[in-house]
Length: 239
Image (cartoon, rainbow, N blue to C red; front, side, top):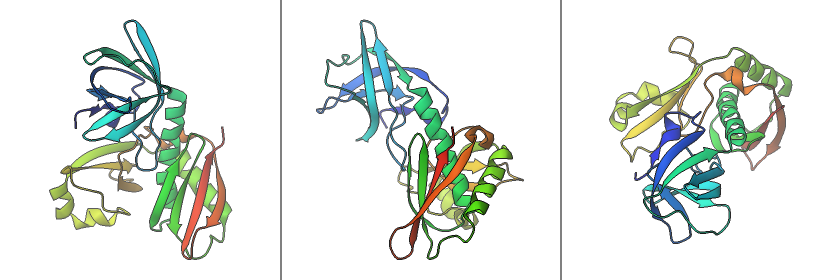
């Protein structure tokens, strides 16, 4: 990839430098490295701003392009020239809330151990779609268990394995709801808990908080029927 995704190694990097390497025909900006998460996996791209000597620009989102990550300006304006050094600053409050929601959805997939058919993340809530024929008998129990896992303050870490290692370890695949794409030759795994207290391990390219306690107060939202065997479960940040 022409853009180094700094958010994969440091999700708390609020500011980062970068060099403009190209412009897209649509008016986007490609930099050699970025801390802006690009839309994918149900998580929206980051917003914020970039500044450079003599200029500044609001960024509405970040998207994936052909071999690169593209910063999308909030409004049409003159772009920094190719070769310009820029400073990229996240809308940190929005990003951090989505990190909390994303990690909360991982916990939801633990509390409801059913196949996941879809999901979405926002700055105040998230949802997962489950293969679930009948609604849960005790919604309060789901919320109670989510709060227990949050309060346990499990560590959230990641590691990389090769596609060959994934194929050679079928037991590992059983811990994942979906086998990830392996076209890049490597797979990022996100673990909640350590090797002795692990409660979740699944492939994920999103941004997460460092410990579950950082999620804070939450509430379980509505559960909607979506088709014959699918139900959509919402969770909300309470602050």
